[in-house]
Length: 211
Image (cartoon, rainbow, N blue to C red; front, side, top):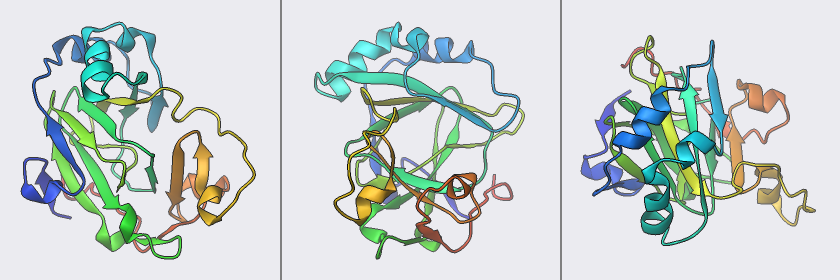
């Protein structure tokens, strides 16, 4: 799979690089958190990260004063497995280079997305990147298996916490797996086995041979 840098013009429909941030304080805090023994971990809100200087800048600058949460996704991963979206942008920054597997909401047809449309983009260490609300994404992929990845995740506060439990009004409502989180799972994923909407068809992409 071809992996393009986020500086490539083809990234524009999916997101953009946010300039002007000194991420040093956040990266140092992230590096103190050990990698999980296996797989991927995610926490929507981590107090040690929200205590850094970047938290206020993300809330007041990147999100225009809206309340946000600053958490992290970290571990080792090379597979697609699922794609999710929110009703708003997500901001990411990694302690090292990482890769995002992305698609667009308008590529979903009758509740299903063909994974052949998924694109891969490499984000350099310390670079702040916005993933647009209309962009499908999921767990980052590592560039180096030994080092894994640590990627900060900034979202409106409450996102990815317990689902509201509202009565479904349409088909899309059945894709909601957490608050502000709509998920399309590949049939081979553990999420599908746990009852998530099977909304991906085609190859369950694995970039291990491309990094």
